[in-house]
Image 1: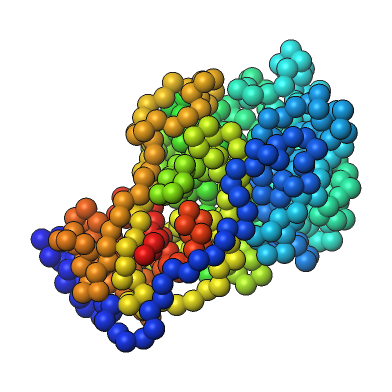
Image 2: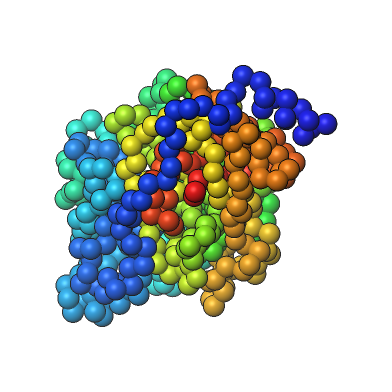
Length: 495
């Protein structure tokens, strides 16, 4: 009955591929950069790290450039070599771009790790940790820029979120002090800050946290950028039931003014392997946030939708670790998501993944199946859709790993077969059928929304747009959306 209903819906008020207008076909186009950067991994090649060694990015358009700040995670980091060649390590990487495709590495934000942060961490860990600065976040205030950051010890909730200010996005930066700090007696963990300004009240809220107790939100004083109440650690916004094992971290908060909704993006699972992005929404900057099924994120249920997860299209070894995102808008109002992608099979190289973000008719964000490469926008006809497609249905990880502090154990950094989201091939026939008796498809040309049947399920409101096929080095047609279970559905036309 469901398949019959889907077929009826697909045949009403939509277009099949039968018109006589010129038909779009995938067009050859070189990738703007290569994925494997092992040849550039030595410390003195840092000027070539425009899209390489990107981890935990925060991005925003500031003046003439898009600026990106990230954790100083480096493939094959060699501190001795770095010292010999006078290359600083651990102090927040900075990049800039005018087109979101070509990125210039412009150095490190700080000359050292702030001493107050080091002292706090070392005093509670027996002198361990505090060797790096994690997860920076940039936000303007008037004529100044505020850069939030965290310093911690791996696998502990002894952590420090600090803030620095500058008159320029490129620094120099002046330290303004501690925002939140935690130790082994704290419920939460002071890492991964993300700031939002309430569109109605002007109040500032900082979301932060990790698998240690979940994610929290604390009100900041806009004038100082520090908490309204000194020492306040805020309130709970998201958690998982088995938080000591199943990772949850990296909150990213944005506001969509058209939908009048705040969106809290979070990252699940180990950062080197099955790292994946989920999202909840609220009409308040401080929450509470609910998921695709109306469940609060601070409940102990795993939440949906799931937007990214490890995936592999044909002609490529695949990507793991596709999470810890920064979400931002362009001057034209287009939303983008930046996150790391770890090149398989070894998952050591960290490439910048920058994806277009769209919102479904139901108001949920979804992301492009392919990285952004500057493709010009265009509309497609039903005739353009006919051809051979690769489809990926993004699922949550099925393999149960042994974890410590929410991360994989040493030596288990490669994906298991059942952890991959693999592609399948589907033929979109001109008559609106999918291959041989596999279902139907149709396109609303006015709305650029695709409907199709997949594995007996009617999946509609899939957003169609132009994009770059990195695996086949072509410009092509893409689609993205969600199925009825809140899992992403991706597609690209390959022939």
